[in-house]
Image (cartoon, rainbow, N blue to C red):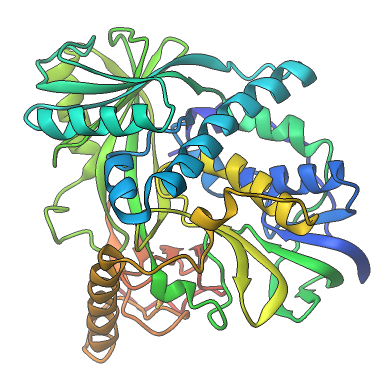
Length: 450
Ligand code: FES
């Protein structure tokens, strides 16, 4: 189950950390957010090293559909109501600027990564009014947005919210090239962070600035990110023989799908559900089978050439957490909670954190701050998230063939699509042998006989 990105890209292997080290900044995690942050810190004259438990790009960067867009589902109309027009404009501007910055970097360095501009669209079969409102809201924030009643998808829609001049690319080719400009230690697992000391299984790194860019922060306290985020899984099939489309599409209906082209392939995505909830809330049944069925309905005769899945961190108010990690540790920073928009938000995160660390003015920082205003929506999500955690912990006491999660003890669920044990509480995952796949857990789990 490898993504098409991993099939044709080899990123140069790096050595593990050999000895204790002192530097100005250390970044934990060599995905897109980590590598870009280290790159911009280096450009700002701050010596930075990156520590990676596995390989560069071995986390979520390789599993994305690689859309670079400021269109993040239905967001702007709600954001203006909740945070005000000024804050929403900062969010929109930071994301639009991130697309331009990708284009600039790729041109400057001559990176062959299929960067292509094109429209990004939300579609619905019924919710015309919501799409109209979103287009108006986005336009008022300076985004080139419009509402349409027709589109190139081969089925009828009630409407489309279209953002112009968005982009797509090959994420690993870009990442591999950018990583050449950064000092990275692979195979170096961070075990503990205390003050300015990062302890790994290979030695200790001391730094003034520490950036957590490891998808889900593994430190529970301070920060309490485990209580402020859930993880979601979603699925993709790559199809040969499907009609070409120019735009990237995302359905906002309950059964909505995601569409984008890469070369002669069409990437069809969908089936999102809370990690570990494989049998509840309509998540029943094999997700790949559902996508294959839909593929044959929409593109009869198309053939699947690859399939893979992604894991995304979802925050309480649907905006990422980028900024200072907590009040208690002034030298710690975090970039997480990117939702389904990791490519664009990785760039936003890298630029915001570089500005904060190098003491530059950053008007966009407030809307991304992990300490931003707590909204009514966030309160509702917090209650739901808490209920899942309580349920997972109660299940831990009941007899089952599934092991418990080493993070905080919730009962793991078997995921037949991925042949993995997944945690419904905060989304850690383990393979069939109990080996750690995704955090926040930091260790393997003890497998029981199924
Ligand atoms: Fe927190 Fe499993 S991820 S208990």
